Image 1: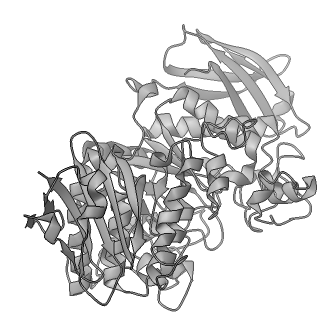
Image 2 (image 1 turned 45 degrees about the vertical axis):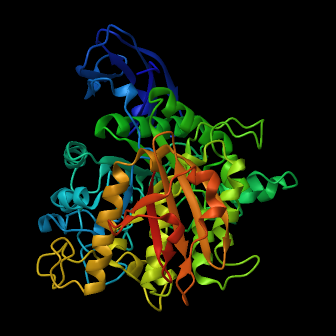
Length: 582
């Protein structure tokens, strides 16, 4: 690795009272760190060029003899590992809640020693989806045009209830056995890569689960914030950037617990911060990851997140990392991106962020009546804020995610508006992310229950009446949506002009929003017509600077040839994607 230093956390009864010893070429013990808790010992190793991959013994001695021996493995790195390509704007990310996608191995539904068992009748319970279920359906994702997978957390989550979502980690180095194993996760990465699909891991440096063994026996008194009085975070993320914010308000946001079952980790503790950084790097290398999605990115504070991300990027310069900053304020989102000059004193290494401002604008645009400040102008104004970002093309754009209502519900189950929104997500700047089941119009009518929002993917369980993988018993509209996604995403997969081409858009008129993606080789014209009442004739004179003499085109969605753009018309609530021709 670029960093030749490695810190080991050793946990065992009175281990602090023993002296560690290593006899292995290329590895030396530089120092040991003793904390007040005798059950912990931290060992700082230096690994030089002489070190070869292999097993070695870590011995723990008292004054006269060895009392304990532990085997440790120094693993070989993958070929050209440091220069791996991360996910980028040529990709479409498919977000999967693993417990709700497919049950490939029913035998791991109940694991001895893990508290919560399967209960598929309970919306907030464990339903049995697992890694094998994802592996079994990689062909489906490949045929849909998906090129990257982001799964909600897969690490052990041994909580007594509501454990399926994965955001209450109880072991940072272990895949939850109800999902599979570390080896199976590595197999998922390998098989996905063979099908042209990258793997992203969801990481949570801010908090762990209340059943983590650290809670029962913390290494230090300051391992957690507010260990004696569980103080809830204010969730006021603006306090980190507010030039007038009080120190106590910033601390209550950063140091408060997300919820009472998620103890807030104190990343100011250097032993803990090193543990979290090394853990992230270990998973990248072990599972051959192409990227990371970081949960609650700002909640760990600016300084630690800068160090965490910079250390990762120093080892993997081309790896992409996307942070969750859930705000509709683009200035706050942009402040976190690498190279931002909004706050020159803060040096970030975070390349990508979730584009919540544009998601919010899209939903408002499709639902509001058209007016001077409402309707499709919302999208226009959201993208007009891109001057704030160092690299807006590296933002992740999405119609919804696992924490909000389904997009089909957000547009009141209007299928035409739904398609307008998906066309926008697939053709605007950035990296599209689609939540599992969006392609078959999954919804959550009348409820915001997350267990319903993250309901099971039909066909993922033996005996399901409906099977979206095969099309069995899908409603006609669901099948139409699936075909629509397949055509759109597979077209996008090979269009460099959509991946990296420039964007130019025009002020919406009467619910009509037009924009162009273009490079030296190709120009794509996208027209979104929200008007529900009439077919509109397109005045192409307005778009001369982008048409540049092109008078013909091909309708990508229908395959129809357009012989004369001057006679172009668009139906109510229709989206057109036109590859321009001379």
